[in-house]
Image (cartoon, rainbow, N blue to C red; front, side, top):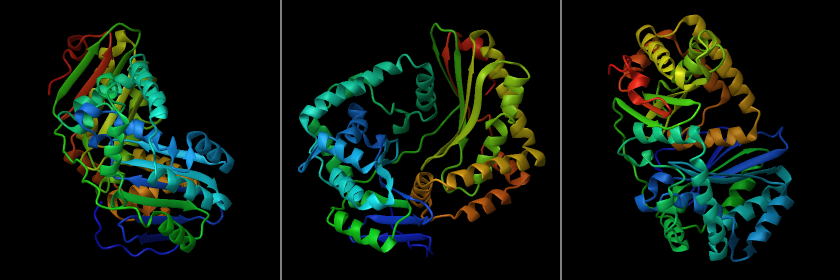
Length: 429
């Protein structure tokens, strides 16, 4: 994470940088009775070596298994006594640890989480108990076709990059992992200059800065740089043919990254195309033709490359027509854009969702962390609404010229239908 000139922030937003490089941001919401904090690290599954996939998932759990002063049982009891709602997650680009607590319990919660993050002992006994659970989760994946086709579209779209690999890892990569591997990964990437502390809710900022400085001020910097590679999606088809009563289909095409000038135009376009019951896909694919039980389109931005993902769950006998109609709608979208009426309705929906999210300290913590991480700024709800309102039909048309919905296009499917039958007469890219 770089450290360019810091934009000036005004209450209720705050910023501070510790001498070791750890950054702090906050959104004060004094009317709430809770506070939510998270420590976000610039390390994720993309930083795992090919033979150690799944390592980050294990490390995420192992941080709660012991410190020099707390056993696994004591940690669990402490979290329960705090009434804390644990926040944890490892994705491809970042890892986050945090908690939501009643604001009067913020101090002991910060002390506990600092101990977990800074002083994990990674005990062998707990590791030997947790690794089989991850292996079970990997095996269960074989019985979950929606997850498997989701991995297939990732593998196909992000081909020849670290983002194409399964987030949980594989049996072959998880089985050999040892606690020494986790310790080496931790020492390499879990460093202050790769960390962002974010907090939202009811708190006193000066006190938080003082407390976090005391807890994390001695955390060493010098973290290894994250792996950055830019996938090059192409016109690709990947079909896993197997018996079943459902045909799962994903399509994806490149789109905007976080912070792109067309970021909100893309969100609105996805809402119009496949965001809900008034969307084009719902109307054309499900309502008019009854081809699917589920269909949606959603943006998937990241640091290096963004995507628009489209999912449809159908039956084998309707799989071909489902793909055909979605392709027709993608071409129509690319050629004719959206209407003013569609855009107006989408703005109402997205702004309503934004207002509801703004009332949640957890959502706001995640929002300011994401915004700062990728854009080095914090946008107020009013600013986000203004950006949404500023999107025009012409801007969406320009976006669709930058990122044509049908080229390059990736298709992934899982079900009984063969590739030839699924795309016969359709795939002309």
